[in-house]
Amino acid sequence: MPSATYGGDYETARIPYYGPGDPVSAPTGLELLAEPEPLPYVDPAVSGRHAALAPGIAIGDPIDERVAAAGRRGTQDLGLLLLRATVGATLIAHGLQKTFGWWGGQGLDSFKNTLSDMGYQHADVLTYVAAGTEIVAGVLLVLGLFSPLAAAAALAYLVNELVAHVAAQHHAGYIGFFLPTGDEYLILLTVALVAVILVGPGRYGFDAGRGWARRPFLGSFAALLLGIGVGVGTWMWLNGSNPLG
Image (tube, rainbow, N blue to C red; front, side, top):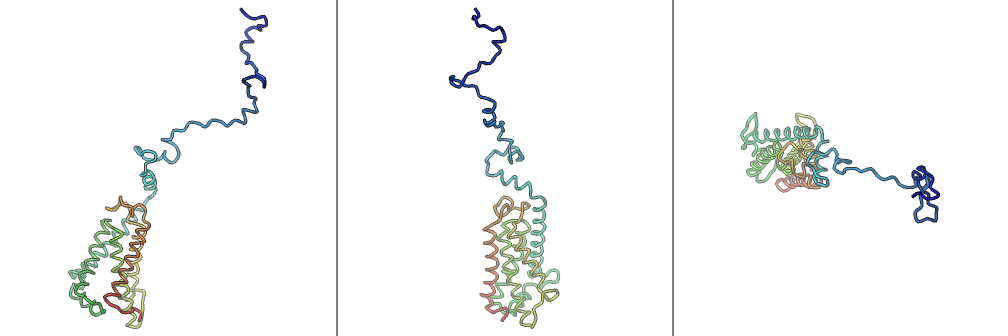
């Protein structure tokens, strides 16, 4: 039965008010403004930087950063392939010239005599080492296989040849830069090899899955120093003269 104070259906629709002393106190409008709004639910599988990842890549997978970066390389890998293959093919052609005398080249006997005239010791062995280094390093660069070591070996050969040319020019009373008697061609090849070592071979080659192709750093500096050191050391060991002396 309704109570004596029953106010009709309107009473049942009213929200009871609890005073400050009551066990449960209704918040005011100002109190609601002070409350932080709940954050909307965000599915981590499609949020943030992970939303653009390829399907099948799990969140937190260490490969996701590499996949995301690889998609932003644009034509970089194509340019690296062109640079690497051009330098490698040039080295192969010069190595074949020295070995077989093709395309107006010297051949091994003439190349050996040239090394002897320039003051190199053990020219008979050095002839095969020099020609073989050009051919093998060139093939590896074209294939994109062991690229830092191949580029370092070719760099050692070119540094040695550049020092030999500077010494020959100095003894003749001049040091030139422009062709046909200058060293601009050797300098250009040397700088191109340094760029391949520092930037890496790119993804279009057999080294695509290796660290020096994705993010070259300390290993590239080590290969660069190795190439320069071997080139200068070979000159000092087998020739032993000051190119500017």
